[in-house]
Figure 1 (tube, rainbow, N blue to C red):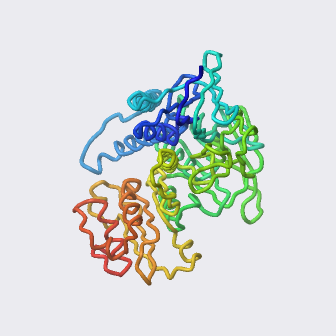
Figure 2 (tube, rainbow, N blue to C red):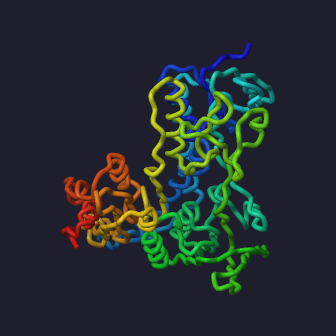
Figure 3 (cartoon, rainbow, N blue to C red):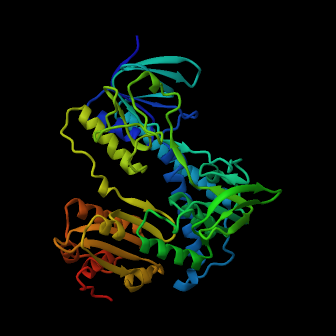
Length: 469
């Protein structure tokens, strides 16, 4: 007889495995289904996204810093890199991270099925196991956490060699001499940062009129300035419509914003645009689950689908496709299932982090969006070039920008580009969750010398009271 569970989660990414842990902590009987052939847990983020990408970025950052050691009075002779060894370091990090997730499942008494899960009826899932057998799982609640996969772009088909996507590029054995990056979102600028620092001639091509287009316009401008200084070419307002593969190169062509013909050629093309929810084969056609036109599952504010007792979280729904948000959605759902009092997620407080060089991080409204929303806006800005700690680090590009509204002084958005931006953002997330004012944030004592002082100084700048400017 099939085993009966309180909740079964399909997918072991940061949404699925976190939901499984919390369910176990709350005393629920939990099953987790993962289709990964080698039985590794962690999903796209852990295996092919966040973790491996940031490992490569860290290696590239260290290599770059080592090349600047003379600035600090240090000497390095014969500096070089071994890219297969860099890839091994990345793979070791991924393996340890995945093993950690496996340990968490055992610790929290989660039953893991290595196979493909398909909903075959209310409270019933069929798992096609890795050994070819099928097993039925009975469950009171189902959470769909199957994430997203690379979306093929017609005309720019990838081959894993000359034309690669974000999965392929993680497995390269060497650094290409040149690369065109199609798209300047997080994936595009992060890989541009990795390979440029290892000596690749990188050109980023973006359809919209600025790079990292979801960020504040000032941040886009500063990243463009920094990229140019690093030798990364950025071309915006370009609609690519054709690709030609040669023997040793790839050529892409299209038109710029003026309607003029443009083309770019390199040894490799990275297609860094397009992902789609992974819903194939889940059996949703046998349920009342509704799928939106863009391929996401329709849910309410508690991640409930139209099918009773079936929930969906992460990249399969229409919220921001971010690992940390998927985790919080998983916790929300499980706590609701367990009978806990829960509040819907405040999506205006979801942080964005991009780990390029310099790092970019933001939470809340951009200056433009705040004005569009009708706020009377006041801005404070503090450059890292005026920070003592940033000078010590030798990383003075960028700034902290705080967007506040005049009437109540509430902070509406915080935008950071520069050293440790993705870590500095946590303070802003806490402050905005507590509805902090710029005055309150500026009066909180920050240790000296730290780069976090720049947040305080930017907050003081909202009222033209910045000290070190």
